[in-house]
Length: 341
Image 1 (tube, rainbow, N blue to C red):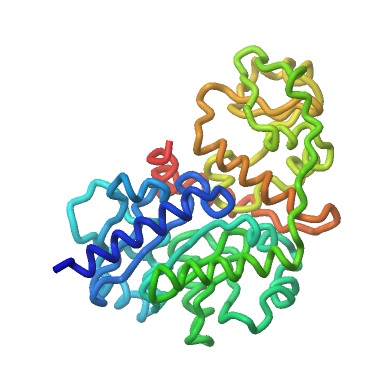
Image 2: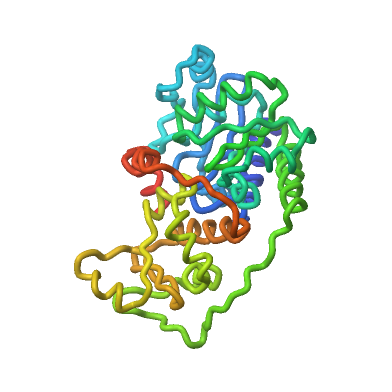
């Protein structure tokens, strides 16, 4: 007779693989999925691992759910979840966020169609227009991932016992349900609402691929026409300067600012003083050193996919200097970044 928990793990792994292969839902090591076993154990994706690899790698870690909920119910969020095996990996930074949701299966993703609204200053108004009363949802202001965000989410869901969607400003969204079919159906229905409200328009590329310079000194052109629109389109180039730090993963993987230059000559004047990994040269393209890996490229493409869905006149909320510093100086995020490399 087949073990039902083994069967559920297989279903979860397939769900993770499906979500992880869609770059509009999950980017690099971002996002996480969990399930609760016998009300005592929370299985959650390990920090820095990829959802897309759930079918080929053991990416889940068991955490003591009883111990975790005891702390949460006492409004204690600054504690380390108790891991129930000898894995050398760490449980997700967002373990508490998963534990506090009462549903069996919890999915946290950075869905581009939704994130493009969560970074807008008027997102509260827009979310009410888009979702209305069709779903059981709450919003949470931006908080540092981990204990602070979990505490805010816990407070938010107290007024709605049926809540199965948590929209986190400048971050992402949590979906929760009792089965993989239900949670996937919920994700699809919610994203459809956002697409129907403002259908995404295809970005028009004016990138001269046959004429572009593929190498500039130690820098190589980032081979993606949409990413290069960040430098060749004036409106996107201006966003790089004014609205770079929109959400945590972008900052953690790509840094606190965009290194933008009006020309290669302008960059040449400072190259001896500094050597940024990633540079944007107006009207020329986006270039990077060899150390610029796939995880960072996926995060940069996510940034393009987000800002290309935002009207030019929209006001955006960027992370403050203090919020950025809290991310970049946090060993938990550095660990996740290193594992994902």
